[in-house]
Every structure is written in structure tokens, then in C-alpha cells.
Length: 139
Image 1: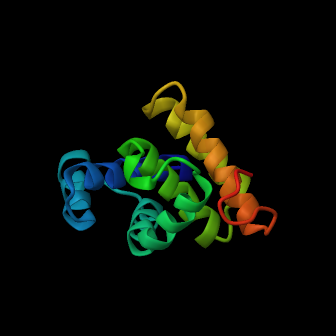
Image 2: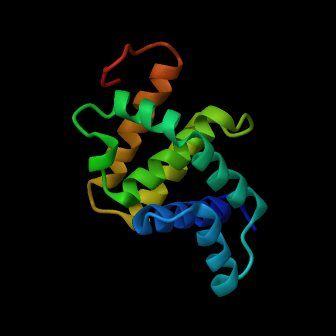
């Protein structure tokens, strides 16, 4: 299986956990019970997002001017957290790949405006990480 499939699995588990306000562990166990195997990379990503969620949300809050994380749709929030985690913590994934994959997820799972929103927020986070945007900037 591909990393794209693993990202989708991680996203679906993160989304389900968020929507149900339930821990990630039991959510992943239900996945395995009803849908079969969960890729190792999917588990790595989902657990990573879970462990760094506070930091991820802080970055997202800085770069998504006018859109607090708690006001985002659960789909968009889960996609953004996942992609930002890959951008910040997975060395062998170039930021542009994480952005493109997130935009693809948003295209498939969210509303018409979501791909542009997700891409814009993540590009802002990438510029912030490179030191090209100050706090609260739009990128």
C-alpha cells in the first residue's frame, strides 16, 4: 500500500476520533475490527498528530487568521493537523508533498472551498516555518 492510502487511513481515524470526541486508540481498534489492516505509517501519523495536537493547533491558529481551530469543520481540522504534522515532524516528506496530499484529501472529503482553504493555511504554515511570515501573517 502507498503512503497516500496511509494518509487517508490516518485522516479517517483522526476525523472519527474528533467527531466522536473519543480517544484515538479505540477508534483505531474499531477500524481494524471492521475494515481490516491499518498501515504502520497511518498509525505513525495518527499517533504523531495525537501527541503533538496542542502544538499543531497553536501553529494553525497563528496562520489561519480569522478561523480559530475549534471553528473549522472537523474534516478540515483533521486534514490540516495531519499535513502540518508531516511538514514539521516527518523528515522524508517534502512540505509541498504534504500540502498537495492535504489538498487532495480536502477535494475528496470536504466542501468546494476547502481545497483552497487547506492549501492556503498550509502554505502559510510553511512560510512561517521558513521565517518568511511573522506571527499572525497570511503568507
